[in-house]
View (tube, rainbow, N blue to C red):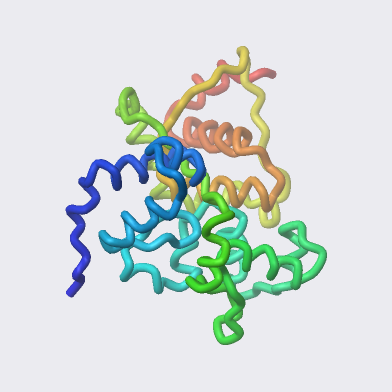
Length: 245
């Protein structure tokens, strides 16, 4: 049975720190927010309450032994992407290194060690090492950037977002340029405008990975996904009315 007391998440300092991390704040910025002299004070505060720093955020002490693949499942970072690529059955470590911009496998290894990961020959992938991460702790900043969006005003989009997430496999099959050829393109009328939407971090990770791997902008992916959604579910006439001919 777990000895971790989940009520600690209600601690004001714990809650505020997680909110700042979710906003992409660095260690130095969080230290400045609380008026401390260094990160050590915050780190010790969390340790006394059953947390450990895992190179990206604080996790319960008992969760610190998760494998790198498990820990990186929804990690929206370059290190997480490397681990997910290596976890595929057909993965080739040299090809993964080249795909991620490294000249050699050793260069990729140096990068991963800087993020707190070491090579596990048995798993043929990187795993998290607390001893390695500890050496980097005082100099590195959070690598993961998590989108923080207020909840207000998002109710009308939740059904669509739930639909997209539940059918992510079909969506990626549709957008897979290797199997389907050229990605469909839709030219919409009207000026460009910004719209803030809240997405699950798991869906953001898939969106980011696909965009980088197939050199397609995230905006194009969303536009194609919405156009195909409207076309399939009875809104094709309305869709055609806003497309440029």
